[in-house]
Length: 342
Image (tube, rainbow, N blue to C red; front, side, top):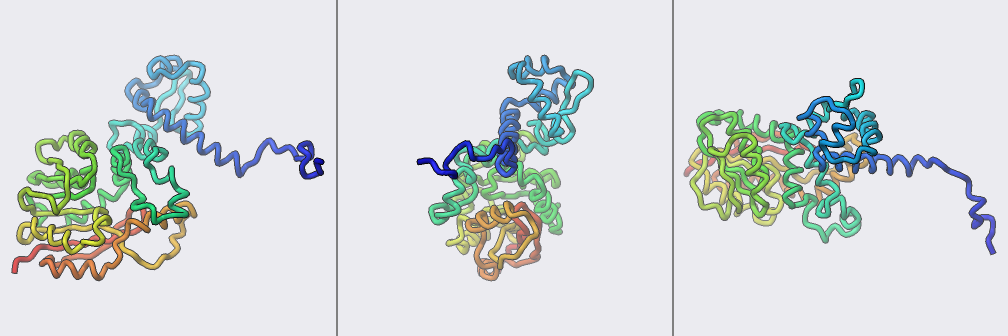
């Protein structure tokens, strides 16, 4: 027998359920923007200027019947602007969603829902974190996404710190280890015309680093090779730079620092930029950011800052400076040290 609570006709009409509909709306908007990036709609608008919906449909392959509603949505999100019957790309979309832009962020968005993205398996991170080794995906697409993210300030801040080293202008060689995208080496070479560099990509695909090096016109000065500092067989270097690259080596940091000291020239510089374990404190940010930070930090923290610094002295690396810099997951610590010969 159907009682009152089971009677469908007794359930009140709810055409709008904000807690549900708002979430679905944001997800749908995200997926439409992602589709526009895959179609390269924004690059097409940038290259062709103000265009009618019919012209955009013909140029991009989007069906004409979808153009009015699609452009209306992009207009609402301020990704396109309108003048009479024509649409053109907005400044914000032009800065972030055109592939040729130095500030391009499209790969970060494209990679987020991919199969290897941690956000696709978030329930495992929440309930069985020991089954995971990293919160960072390691696909070629994810390296491109990380490059987008690092260009929001991390690369700039680390490079400016590197340039504060008094001998930076006299340096001639640099090794960037396991960054994957080569942007630190590129930025350093841009600010020292005599500098050449090697980018060690570890087990990651060398393609993204090679793409960036070509994009920034550094093919003659920077080369990319697989492997890390322990497998490196090339010449010694004036600078070794590692930014968020040591987390997989937590158990053999002494060996890594010994390898770094070995490949450094006398008085050469080792610059490290990493997160360290610390008591959790409120950041004043939203809950989603706090959750992401907690999951990320489980896998991407060096456990003991004092122990890490003691390994410098053990391996003849004299600390010159210790400081902090901003990053996407809170403040990280920069160590700068020179190799001293006994």
